[in-house]
Amino acid sequence: MTPPAARPGPPDSWDEADEQPRSWARIAFRRIFGDGENLLDWAAPMGSIAGVRVRIHLFFLVFIVARMLWSISRDSFGPGYMALSLAILVALVVAHELGHCVVCRAVGGEAEEVVLWPLGGLAPCDAPPLWRAQLLTALAGPALHVAILPLTSAALAAIGAPVLFNPLRVGLYLAQPRFDAWWTIALGWTHVLNALLLLFNLLPMLPLDGGRALEALLWRSAGRRGAAERTLQIGFLLAGVLGVGALASDHGMILGVAVFCALYCWIEWQRLRAVETLADPAFARAAWLSLSEDDSPPVETPSERRERLRQEREARQQQEVDRILAKIAKHGMRSLTRAERRTLRAATKRKRQG
Image (cartoon, rainbow, N blue to C red; front, side):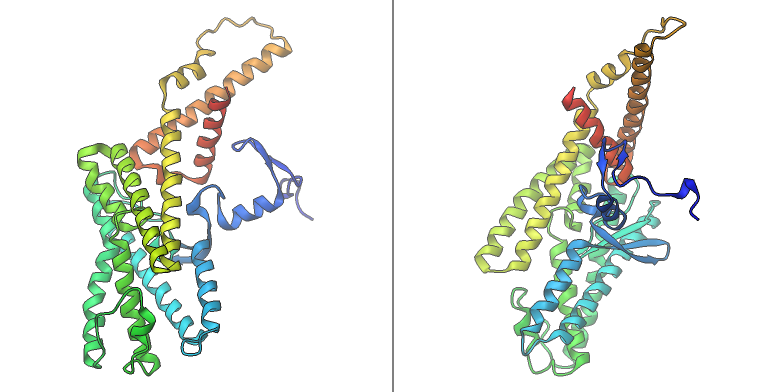
């Protein structure tokens, strides 16, 4: 028999931080994919490596399923070869993210979780709030691909296969006669995917490593907030250019990357605006004003008690908001937990309504 304390609540329980009813479907979704309003949390757990939790993003899962379905209709490029390429991609992405984690810990930061997507990772490591540490951590992933590139190039040259290829026509490259066995095809895929991961992650837009490196470089002159704003603006612009190019070349995969990066930049921009709203001194003064006088009568009426409890609750909420804002100032928006993000959203909603 389940103890009373362990029994689940009613189907529509109340989430104080969200200030809205939560259905069982929503609770189940959050257990798997986290906070649905946070793009980074749309990920399912895979396990852990060297103390680092590994999760795979929903976008990556959709990508894998779509590529497998696409391969079924291809005579010369069937599901077996596609599964091989996807396995190599996952291995390269995991190695990419572990590179970030190793460097982050080496510069004094923490790396507890990575979220995988087709071009690397989405959840950045918690590097120290110094631009050099942030830059080194961001460049660790691309550096791994740079180290692998000469190895695959030398192996391809040894079997007489070409090293250079057209990134938009990968299928034509792998259809050459030299790639006539499983191991040569695996080598070709490793070379191609490693080069593509390097190429994409050098693009200066978030959440790609190039965007994080750009943000770290701008940090020196523009400060942390200014660097974040400029990086997001550049990301919007570059995502638009990339999307137009993808439409012109009829390349759906690149279009998907452009849309995803644009959506990520938009969500991060909204968070910056929310932090700016909550940091307004007038908001803090209003929350604490009701506690500035301590002349309540010894005996409270029911309405006075309700008002006092409301004031105390608002004071506690503001204390929590202040703590979260201090954490953002020290470690950045990406360091917040799901509960802290919900608290920020709830506080922003209260201010806008009142």
